[in-house]
Image (tube, rainbow, N blue to C red; front, side, top):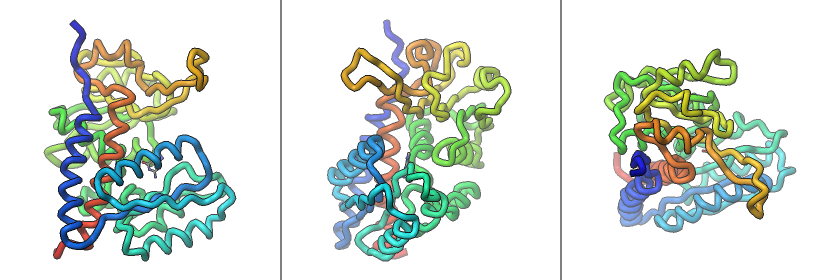
Length: 297
Ligand code: GUN
């Protein structure tokens, strides 16, 4: 019989959307519609798809959304002006600037311009700092927060667990490490952050109770790197050539799913694992941002 060890990210994301929808209704009953502004620069095909999916989910949940599209040639100053305008706009409780931005724009400066109270992406230095400090009043970046929620709702024990995070990016790897090392009932893990200069990554992985792969290398995690019964979370989205399909490519994760699944205790499918959770956490952050301005404190 086929081993049933999949973490169903779509189902868990739906649970969260049901909770968010109720919170949106409560905010609406106070006469305010939660709103989320997307900023997209240029026509990167993946960014178009991602923002489109997020907008669709906003509509389903009753969140007002609008995408502000600017051409690839937009200057940094123009982009910062747009963000300043959105910071002051009471229709939008959240602002998301879709990455990547064109090379002439400094992402760090742009993310730091978003008001921390509207920073539903969790990329502003104040929110990054709060995450490090374990201050739960900040916004957490959506993908690592989504992975954390997947672990909690799938009953994966993190207390005392050995976790290996693969990849040190600001969007996933670094904040993931910060989340799981906190002194908290839902964290308390011993986290090892591996990256391109780590010596013998396979050896680190073999010790791990939980592997979180977010380094962006197609099928990097192979069965020989995984301890029997370990939980494996695949954050990767990589394009690989495939002449058998009309598009000429297909998307694969950072985990060699076919060979790792039989060995894993629990594993995320990809697609259908982490992806839907990123959107669920974005919607949750947005309703929280709206609650903060409508609920008497
Ligand atoms: N690009 C890839 N992931 C993300 C994300 O979580 N937020 C934004 N704004 N851009 C991204």
